[in-house]
Length: 142
Image 1 (tube, rainbow, N blue to C red):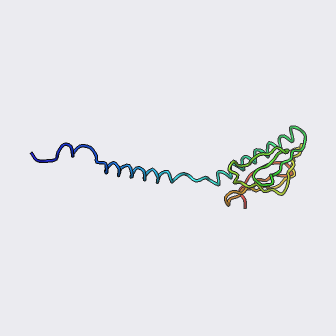
Image 2: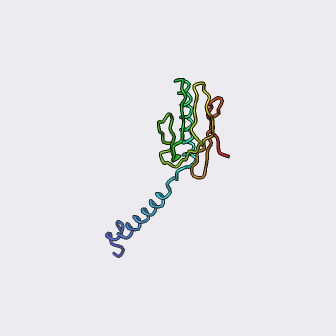
Image 3: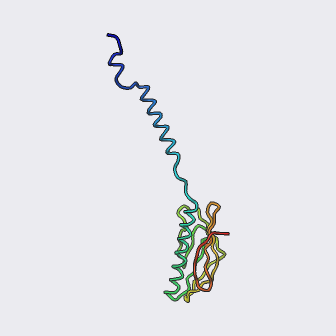
């Protein structure tokens, strides 16, 4: 009776197990390396939505409380203040707000008007405030 012994035919060798473990480890490291990158466009959209919402709230406050409300960008450009109350524009701090000076919203709904630029990662958005109506809207920078 010649042939292979039952001891050699059953199971895996240590070398085979190590090769499988190495292949699985390499596969996991390749997959883990492909994490999604942050989206500058989404970050810019979120920051502009935050800014527009706060500008509209400042206008509504001026009308409801029958007093002027002042909006101003912070010195570092990473946030703004409404009536002196500071707010952060982006948690990551990568969106820069540029505006020439403070903007006032009047009790009659009008505003001093102006253009505010949001800049992040080479992309820009423009938020405009109409001086006559106080209307706030956002668009892409040209």
